[in-house]
Each structure stands twice: as structure tokens, then as C-alpha cells.
Image (cartoon, rainbow, N blue to C red; front, side, top):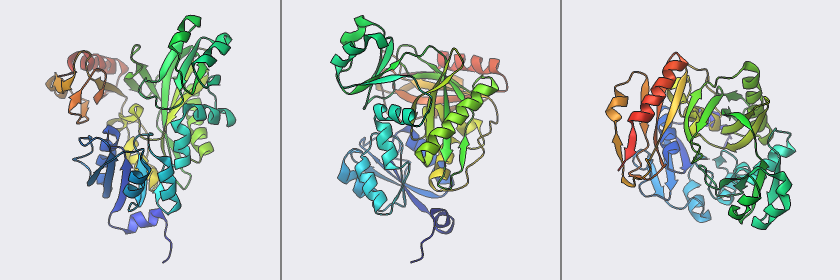
Length: 387
């Protein structure tokens, strides 16, 4: 049978079958974009009540890290993608070798799964990042007292602020992780910023405008963000240049979030990356001509990438479970937010709340920065996730 490209297949066949590994909120918003392109979605997730379950065309409960489960799930798909990095890359490689389109490529996912390998990739490819030292265990920290202050990161299994801690001086050595990890030089940064970049198989690359992230200082989670970031043009250009460099060096296909530091002396350094739609791109659903979710689909289907231009300045506020509450989720003050002009509420469909769990987000759009800040403050004050 004559071979055709995925683009030709997409344009000629009634519906493309897309497999998504992970059924959380990122998958849910990806499915909502996929429906507009008439794409059939099948989701694999270990949670029988995952947010995607009642939205996807087909839902399979199973472990994302189990070879046979992932392999059987993906065999009948034209395209496979991920909404979480903790997946069995060996199964994905097997499927790729059997002709299934897998994006991002399994070898890249494997490298990103381990922050130690990520940092070595940056170093090999002259991508600016903080100096670092690889550690095998807790005892290794004692050998590098002259490197402190530093941030220690677990090689694997860290997420949403977990697996990351400051080691500022000798008094902090006792709390060190006793597992393969790295320490990176503590960065005295001015801002934390992020660039969402997409690349398709044809090599077309587009970046979204740089965003500025504001973190909760205690729990190391994004509290809210501004888009686009308030930066001088030269810094924004450098951040975009670095994001493009990363995807090109990896020969990456799909959507990549590149989190960076802007140092107080004006340098831009890559912190880490995520090979999927990302928390720092939620606002694009309302604030940009193409959302990060549609852009990811365009990239993995080798379709032309959409315009990433900003329609209006925006902010995105994460809705986190309130401290002290655990159980069936209730949204206190929701009616006040829904009554505000330019506010868009996204609830993720998680039945249970717990302290600082991501339960949803609110995007606000306005023409002025002052109005954005006022709306951010209003959302944070009035909308609470309790039980």
C-alpha cells in the first residue's frame, strides 16, 4: 500500500485516533481542543475517576509505568502523546518501532524524566543553565560544602515542588535526599519566566510570548502568572532564542515548556523543561489566537502551527485546595468570579480536595496591568476550594 504522510492521512481520513497517556487536567483540556479537529481520543490513567474519564471517547484504567499496559493501549492508535512524564518509555519505543507515531519521542521523554540527564543535555548543547554537581546519595553532599548555597533536586520522581529543597549551608546537610540527585548553584534571580515552544515534524517552530511566574514561597507551586511578562525586549528575545535552541537540539516534536530564571545581572538560565502542555500555558485558551493545547495537536499531527500572538494581556491564577481541608471539593465564592467581566473559570473535575492540590484555574484578561492585578487579588481573596 502506498505510504502517505500523517498530514495527508489527517486531511483525508474522517477521524484520527489519538492515544493520551495520562488523564488529568492537561489531558482534559487537550481533549476539548481535539474535539474541534474531529479527533477521537483514548486515555490511559490509573485513577478510575480521572478528570478525562467522562470526556474522552474511550477510557482505560491502568498503570502508565507498566510495559504491557502501555503497549496494549497504544497498538491501535495512529498517534500517541503524553500529559505526564512518568510513563513507560520502553513500551513507547516498541510502539514507535512498530510504526505508531509517538510524540514527544520516547528517548527524549526518558532524558527529561531524570533531571540529572536534563542538566547534562543542557551542558552538552551549550544551553545556559546553573552550574551543577551530580550526587549519588546523601553522603556526597559533604564533599561539596564549598559549592553551597545550592538547590538539591531528586533525579527522578520530583514534581510540583516535591523532590526539591534548598541546601544553604552545612546545617542543612541532614535533610539531604539519600538518592541519585543533583545540586545546582543557588541562583539569585530577579524573575522566574517560562516559554512554551512548539515544533512539528516539518521543522516549523513557534514560541508563545514569555510569561512571568509568581510562586508560593512555602510550597514552591505557581500561585499566578502574567502574560506576556513585563520584560525588556532583549530579554524576551533571549528567552525565545533559548527555547528554540532546546527544541532544535533535541529534534523535538510537540509542545515543550521551558522554565527559566532571569538573574539579577540580566542573564537567562534554563531551570527545567516539561515535554507537554504546562501550567504556564493555561491562559492561552482565552488570551492567544491559538491555545497551547491546539498547538500541541497541530505539532504532533504535523499540521501548520497557529499564531501565538496575544489578543489581550492576561493573568492565570491557580486554584489550590485550601490548607486544612480534605474531602469532597466545594468551591466557595464561585458566583462572584463568574459575575466578573473577563474572568474564565476552569475546574478540573477532581472530586477530592486536599491542601495545595491543583483543582482548577482562573484566567483573567484586561487591557491594563493594573486591572489584571486587581482581578488577581479579587480571585485569590474570594474563590476558595474547601470541603
